[in-house]
Amino acid sequence: MQQLYQSGRLSQYLLLLACLAGVAGLLASRAFIAIAPIVGVVAALANPALRHSLPNYFRNGAAMRAAAVIVFLLLTGLYTSEWAIWRHELFRDLTWLAVPLAFTLAVPLAGWQCLAVGSLFVLGTAAVGAATLVGYLLNPAAGNEAIHIGQNIPAITHIFHIAFGVMLALAFFGGILLRRHALAGPVLRGALVGAASVAVITLHVLAYRTGLLVLYTGLLAVALRLLLSRNRVLGLGVLALLVLGPWLAYKLLPSVHERVQGTRWDIEQFNERHDINEYSLARRLAALETASHIVGQHWLLGVGPADTHAAMMEQYDWKSFDLRPENRVEVHNQYVQALLGGGLVGLALLLALLAWPFTQRWARRDAAVSLFLLIQATAMLVDAVLDLQFGLNLFVFGYGFLVVAGERRSNEQ
Image (cartoon, rainbow, N blue to C red; front, side, top):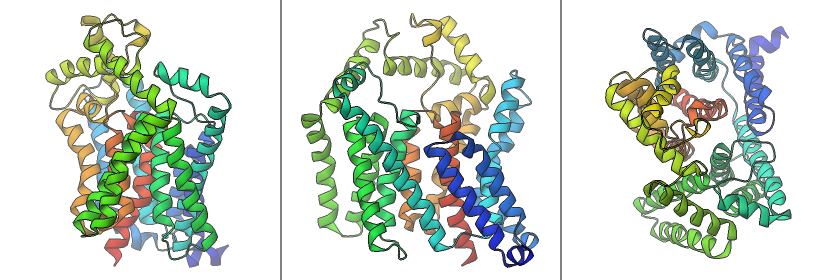
């Protein structure tokens, strides 16, 4: 054991275990999500060169921006009125510290270990998608009826549908990128391509609205990148897919047709001021209008992340949109939620997390980093993903694995 510790392999294997536990937690067992950051911190402490590596954490801009989230939350304690919620938020947000610490201080993963973690995510997500797809195909009529009234086919492992759609899009791009990995053999490359195909088919057949949005946003970015690199034929081919894909899905898949029609009807109910108690998207539009009034009054520092729910419910008392109390939802937009809880300061922190890596040459050249941040930034337009524990862990794990670790490699070169 002493030799394992002194060689650094103990730290490296513990970091690998933390990553595998994190992926397993996202796919199936939520208990592993809570364990993974703890194992990651232990991996950092097990680094025999910890004292020498400690400056790596403070030199890592991505890790510092993540730590700034905790610092700002501590500052909001000066004006919060919801102390119980504030303490809970502080506890759950400790992952912003734990995950970057692991990826900056533990012995870094070897190439084959990174490939193993990425492959597990891609293949595991595709497997959950395939199983969910089979469940839909066994009774498509019931599934289409649920889609028509704005509901979603739940993942077989009960992953929240918005997060699951994002995971499927990430699995598609991850499979395409990992098949080019130097250590990927023919069998693994074939499995990754197959998993990417399953992910994109699942997104279309189950008509996950957010998943399709981020998928096609990512494809648009790929097309533009190809065109700018003068790979015009392939770039134009991807652009053609951007047009043909949605059109064919709408014409051929009843689920997509029902989703489009349901979305139109949903928006009409809000615009025409009808009863919107049973309409998901209309209630989200009402929440945005409600939040805008609060943001206008607390534009600099917000009401405090712990106080957003109370502030929203109080504003609903002034203008309820005839919503029953149980249907008065909170904001489904991370940018507006950041403004609501933290004002311009909170929004600046969020934008720094998402946009600052693009100022670095190493990040712009890394397709995995660029696509991850773009997909997450797009998903945040339609949901407050960081306010859900699952969405927070999905983002922070990917941020640590790709952005923090990527910046560390760049700094060490």
